[in-house]
Structures are given as C-alpha cells and as structure tokens.
Image 1 (cartoon, rainbow, N blue to C red):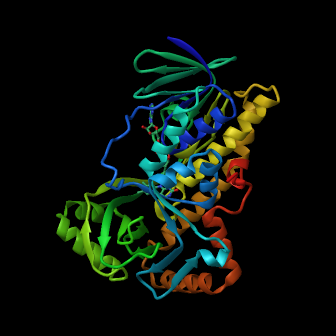
Image 2 (image 1 turned 90 degrees about the vertical axis):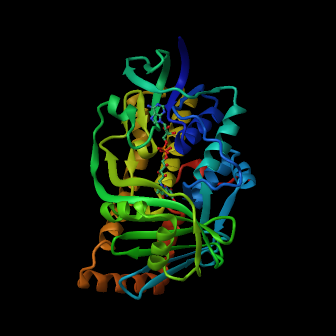
Length: 405
Ligand SMILES: Cc1cc2nc3c(=O)[nH]c(=O)nc-3n(C[C@H](O)[C@H](O)[C@H](O)COP(=O)(O)OP(=O)(O)OC[C@H]3O[C@@H](n4cnc5c(N)ncnc54)[C@H](O)[C@@H]3O)c2cc1C
C-alpha cells in the first residue's frame, strides 16, 4: 500500500499526538504510526503515570481545543510547592499567588492527555491514526521519505517526525547518536492515600538516595508519588510487600500529610540523561523524549516535548504557507536552533540538581542549606525560578504564548 502525506509522525504518545494535531489544524495531511493500543481501565482508577503540566503546556492544549476535554475528565490544580532536603533544614515554598497566577500548573494523568488529544484528532479528516502499527524503517530520498511498517505497508511523506520516545526507532534509523548517561536510578511510581489533605500542594524531599515527590491528585487525600532511588535501593523497595513499602514510604517522607493509609500497585522506570547530537536531517525531525531525556525531579520532560511539538508545527506550517518544502533541511534547522538551547539548559539544570542533592558530603550539604534559604528569601531569584518552572519565560512558540479562550 502506498499513501501520500505531508507528515508521518512516528509515536502517538503525548508529544506525537499534540504535534500531529497542531499540523492537522494547520491543514497538513498527517499520518500517525502508534504501536500501542490504548489501555482501557475503569474511569475511577488513576493512571500510575501523571505529569506536572506547566502553564505554557496548558496554553498549547487550550489553543488546540483539547484543554476543556482534559479538564472535564480529571485535572488537579497545583497551587503551591514545597521542596526540602532531608539532610538540612532549608525549605523552599513556592506559591502561585507570588506570581499573580491562580495556579503554578496542573497534575494530569498521562492517559487523560492522550485520550483527550486523540479524541480531537478523530474529528480531523486530514489526520489518520494507524494503531496498532509499528515502524520498521525509514528511507530518505530527494523529494520525500518512505516509512515502512512491520506489516509491509509503506507511507510516503515530505517529512517524517520521530516522537517515539527514548528508544526512538526513527533516531536509530537515521543514525543519530545521543550523548548522555544512566543515573543508575529507578523511579518508583504509585498512587497513595494519606489521612492528611494535600491542599493542592506538591511536595518533594531530597533524600540521600534520591528525590521523593508527592503530587496532588483531584481527591484531596490522594497523591501520585515518584520515588527516585539508586538502583539497589529501588530493587529492595520494589521487592517489599504492600505494607512494608507503605511503612518505608512513611519513614522517608515523614508525617507532613499525616498517616499514609494505603498504596496502590507500583510501576518503575529506569532513569537517565540523553540528548540527540542533532534534532534534524533532511526530511526528518525528532521531538520529545526521542530528542532528549531528563530526570523527572523537575517535572519538565513532557513540557519540553510539548514546546518542541508546538515549535516544529509552527515552523513547518509557516514554510507551507510561504510555499517552501516542509522537509527541507534549511526549514527544519530553524526548529533545531529554536529549541536546542533551552532544552540543553533544562537538561543541565536538572542534572546539577540531581548531583547536588545526591551527595551527603558535609560541605555540599552546607551549600545546599545556604542555597535553599537564599532561594526562599530572595524575592527576584525565587520569582525567576518560578517563572522558568511554570514555563512563562523564554522564546515560546505561538501556541504556547497566548490563550484563545
Ligand atoms: C517517573 C516519571 C515521571 C515523570 N514526570 C513528569 C512530569 O511530572 N512532568 C513532565 O513534564 N514530564 C515527566 N516525565 C517525563 C515524561 O513522562 C516524558 O517526557 C514523556 O512521556 C515523553 O513523551 P513522548 O511522547 O515524547 O514519548 P513517550 O511517552 O515515550 O511516547 C512514545 C510513543 O511512541 C510509541 N512508539 C515507540 N516506538 C514506536 C515504533 N517503532 N512504532 C510506532 N510507535 C512507537 C510508543 O508506543 C509511545 O506511545 C516523567 C517521566 C518519568 C519516567
């Protein structure tokens, strides 16, 4: 089978789906190749995977007409954030009111984002979702690129976009290397019930073995946890039965949210840092985790990916309006120049946090103490950190800038 599209997007996760929708809204003919069928779970069960979504990401969803559906399904507003260090007395408190905003961001289940985005995609006649379908290989020519599926189908497009995650097949097919390393850490995620109310605040404690975050869900007594630990410690925690894990969690987190009443099943993810040596080739571009992978401690991975998606869509649709070839390297380089620097900054900052808080050396602990106290008391520094964390600064693509509510 041979079909013609403007863009073939490999990967229909959060980033790929948003990119496809943005291109579809701009009138491009799009195909999405996605290997995983959606998981159907009872609506009252929370997805173990949630994301802290910045205000910039919310604007993207708003402008694509997806936010209303996300909000109708399930969203938790994030109004405050507390960050502290188990080895020292410093605490930083961030409050949305200090920025003059109603929220610092939102906690949304990954499944909710994908479902709402795909629902909108289904309304677009110019977007075709092929699922389940697996990419086998790509071939780039002068005038177009061919994406071959494992079932033998071949799709022809002007541009192939890899939104296929950290193990990106598109990136490997193009021979693009990544720079990075494993953190020798595993993140354990679960849904936790506490007898205390989270009051829509996120809390993160830096333990000597890695950060532990409690993210507030819609139910005032439910939080989603991300417990990043050195591999050996994480394996031991994963081997514990429910009650022993609950007790270990209580001991490490303390009683800030009262008693930890119950813990759901757990899932785990290997952590690492990775950055593709380039984001584009002729007729090919990488977005999201296919281009970069960060530690989850700052909750920025998907937010960076959504900015990639909005930026690439803006560059590609601009080229189409100007009558240019959307797969030309010169066009795609504009996307790379726009995003690479700010992605690299976030990778470096997150890595510095991971390392700075991962040591128990007394001198570094002292520095951390001073740093946390300074961040909390120096108004302009704190404001800058908050503005960056919520995505309100930088050279944002149009979709992330204004809200057409
Ligand atoms: C524990 C944890 C907590 C996190 N918390 C946050 C947070 O709070 N905030 C935040 O911003 N980020 C967070 N992140 C990061 C975030 O989850 C990722 O950045 C995000 O999922 C990347 O989205 P993506 O669409 O680029 O890739 P993915 O989510 O990996 O999606 C890739 C898609 O491509 C498909 N695919 C792969 N290969 C093929 C193929 N060959 N053919 C067809 N389809 C294919 C896959 O099935 C998948 O659907 C967290 C990460 C972890 C591990």
